[in-house]
Structures are given as structure tokens and as C-alpha cells.
Amino acid sequence: MNTTVTQNTVRELPELFLQMLDLRVHLWSLFFLVPVGRGQSLQTLPPQECEDVFHWMVDIARHLAVKTTEAQHYRRVALQRAAAEREGLGVEAFDTGPLYRWLSARTAELTAGRTLPERPMRPPIDTNAGRGFAFIDHLGNVYPSGFLPIAVGNVREQSFVEIYRNAPLMRARRDPNGFGGACGVCEFREICGDSRSHAYAVSGDPLAADPTCLYAPAAGHGESATFAPRSRPHEAADEYRRGRSRRSRPRSRRCP
Image (tube, rainbow, N blue to C red):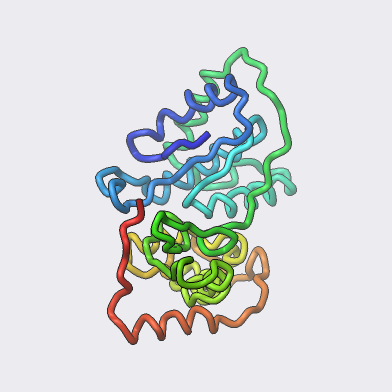
């Protein structure tokens, strides 16, 4: 089951959580709105509220399998919470905001006196736009995702395998060491990668930092990283940027 999360819908999540349990849904996917196309008329969550929803999702993940779409930094929060639990700490160890407290209180109110099912938390899966995933439209154009409207090839002209493996943007997407801003130095960059669609929608650069993530990487403060990233060159990202600088901004097709 899919649910779009916006400023107008976020406070409906506790009620929807109960509906998911009643319907015995196998997986609940929360899609964090990307402001493209018709979505530009809706309001995305600010970074702190995204963080609050992620922590709430970790809480309910013990009762229902949940995942995010276009909010890959949920994986970071899930890993941080797991690390805190190994040290005997809970969500109180994190700087959550008013929305988390409201979601938690409302969920507790709705589930009072009810026995909730217990299940192991579903591990976050390392897929992202152009990294284990791609979108092909009705004309055969290939995009890293349906919300990143930069065509990287067409399956009528070349094989999908060739496009996926070799298109400069697809290769750059699989090279998180070449991302810009905080994402490029974040210790979670191999696991998260953040939403390239959000980065493109706001900055016009699909390799820029995700504006919906508030995390300050340890590397940016001269501290030891929580998770040591694999050492990997970022030639793919450099190649994509060089190609981009030799032409005007890539033509974007509006994805259906």
C-alpha cells in the first residue's frame, strides 16, 4: 500500500497505520512528495519533520513492514536507532521535534487497549534512482526514476542493459563519493544516497545534496565517521559533470 506524505497528509498517518494493520497489508510504502509536475502545487515536509516521520516509522516498524520512496535517508535513521538500541538507548537519544511527539501520542491514543502484532523490523534495502532501479516511459525513454525527469537513453535505440550500465548519469548515481555538499562526505552515503529527485527538483543538479536531509555528517566536522565508507574513486560523477558543462542544462521530459 502506498501513501503520499505532504504537509497536508502527515497527521493522517496514525489513522492510516491502524487501517494498514486492519487490512493486514504486507508492506506500507510512504512516498515523500517530490515537487515536480502536479506535485509542485503540494507542500513537502521540511527536513526536521521528515526526520520526525522517520523516527515514528522506526517505532511502528516492529508491528508493520514499512519503507520509504524518495526519502532514502530513512535508512540512516533506522541504522542510527539500531546502533543506539545496542547501547541501551531509545529515541530519547535523538533530537526529535514536535511532529514526532504528536505522531507518537496520537498513535498511542489510537492503539490504547489493542494488542499489536510483533514482527522483526524490515531491513532497509539499498536501492535508489539509477541504482537497482530505473523508469521506462511509454515512448521507451529511460530515466533514473519516475521523479527524476532526465532521459538517459531510449530502449528503441539501444539496449536497456547498456543504458543502465553506461549512461553517464546512471554511472554517476552509483558513485556517491562524487555527490555534492553534505551527501558527498556523509558516512552513510553508500547506504543512503538520499533522494536525487529532490536534489534535482530544488537545485537543478541531480548530484547535489538532498535538501530534505538535515543530518550533519561527522566528516564535515573533522570527527570519526560512524560507518567507514568504502574507498571508491568518483570518476563517474566527474565524467557526468564534465559532459553537463559542455552543453546547456539537459533537456528534461515531463514524466507521466
